[in-house]
Length: 82
Length: 82
Image 1 (tube, rainbow over the protein chains, first blue to last red):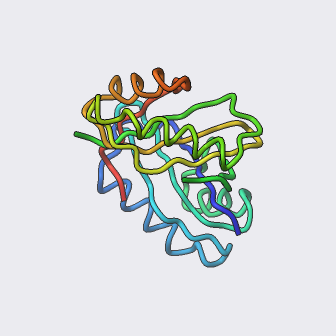
Image 2 (image 1 turned 90 degrees about the vertical axis):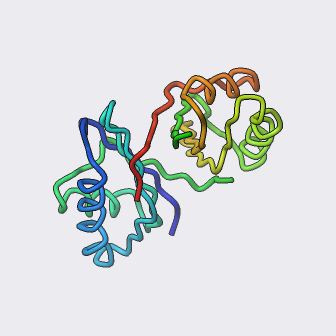
Image 3 (image 1 turned 135 degrees about the horizontal axis):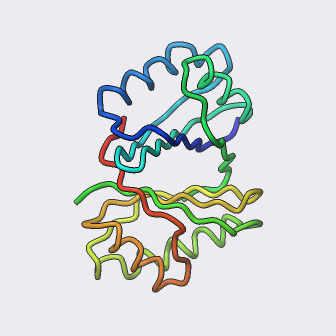
């Protein structure tokens, strides 16, 4: 297991409700890939969303996001953190 | 005050010690701009670093990072989070 930060773009105008809904959809199926989404942050002006997770691989994170209809542009493994 | 996520690139090979040192340098002067850096995550393979902060403006975040020698590529205001 490692930490991952994934980044989505094109979410201009995203609201708190939309982010909560997308996050809930991920949480509902994350166990199937051994992923644990921890937090998410959204910039509605640029349309950028960041999700922090713990997961076995970047591909597992992406599979969950794809199945819930919001694939990430990039999934970064971030084993180093302070 | 709002939340910000800033992103740095070009840090390929960054170590835990390097991230801790950069973060400490930011913490040492952050009060001068009213910034509070909370956490940072690094991907040594792609060289990407993410920093989460609370600050009055994106420019305040960037001024701290510039003064400590590691300007961000982008500073995103992320008022929406779960």
